[in-house]
Image: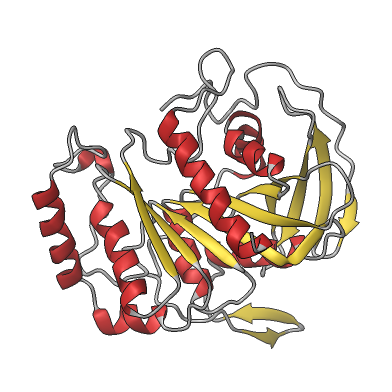
Length: 330
């Protein structure tokens, strides 16, 4: 992974940071604004109320002017790590967001609570009832429900066009697009890049070992078409089709599923697409041959610069074109 620092740091070089100023907004707080290295567009950190009243951070940026602008929200991974994570990603993993800003979109890096193993995802709604004057939930709020609260918040911002809101998620962030759009209609179009959707697809005997503990590497040295075809067939056999198709049935937005040719989960990415297609959904597929998981979000290199390769540029250009079609009608 081409990174400049650990999540404990914020930027490869010094940045000008405004002192925290708490400004109340509907459903959250405008917390702090700071410069982005090499950019004339600052980032503003917002802290947004979740279903249980705790706060989750985003780093939001917009093009010059008052808007309202279409907005794309960006997510990756399993959650946790809070404001430090959003600062790190805003400062050091922002090349993709810069391209969207240049295309006229407001953008935001999201963070949300950590994914949990138990209770296992079953698609059940979060329901509350009053107890001693305060809500009690039927289960704990989950990470994708934090994203819904974020969506509802950013739609209230005067420079955001809430009718033109997109979402782009990588890995678990891609799976969250499936979970969210299966019951919530606040997203207009979404990209699931390398979506780790095994739980959403109700794949039986889900492998829980970390990639380093598996027999196969996260990225194969070469694409083996026969092996991939066999893995896709096996994944189709392992999923509970009745559950998977019931979850997919309510989805009513355009979705662009992005695969990665040599990823050890390419079978899951492909089956995610195939089931959406089988269900008659508005879905697109394209796979890219890149060495790194999460390649659509390039990091700064060791010199503190962005140096995306041709495949990263292609994937991001494809992503902007997708949102242009569905959020701008171009």
